[in-house]
Image (cartoon, rainbow over all chains, first blue to last red; front, side, top):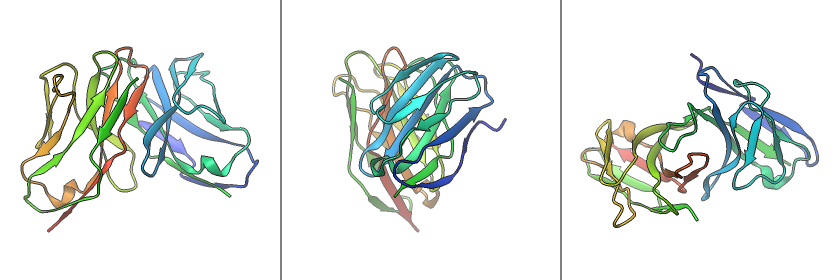
Length: 114
Length: 112
């Protein structure tokens, strides 16, 4: 099992550019989520999905879109990048999204927006 | 609302010292509580968890007890090693499990 994989590992964008951060898991997990990690802020939830075709907003959803067409993949789209979106992005998955479930994290994508 | 507050870092300890990282929480219901660890350049991984009051989670010599009366989940280890150097995050999951809330993280450096 590869677990949770994320691509790319590093990305530099110019303001206004768009891009998609990829996330995939091979554990057949129903629940997937995206976080951003900023200094002094910990991890903040951007969007999450409890299964294919179902997504919902987290704490900081503005500027980000998601979709979940398959169980395995949960891409995060930045439609028009802004410097405030400079951060490290983590994708995570868990079996059923229950409150006791362990989340498995990917290695992260470090994004810089100039 | 739900939130997690953990002690500010960074924390620097000598090898074999005792470690405590404080964590308190605010929750609207009866959450599950977690400690995650992040080693340099990696994603977070679960260290331990507790799902109800008075439960004790333990792993790799680390322990934390779910204290409902003080809304706390402090992380402890009796004798730290250099390999324990990492960032530690306290987190809670609400009853529905759809959202997780993380503290700001505490950086630990253990020196030989």
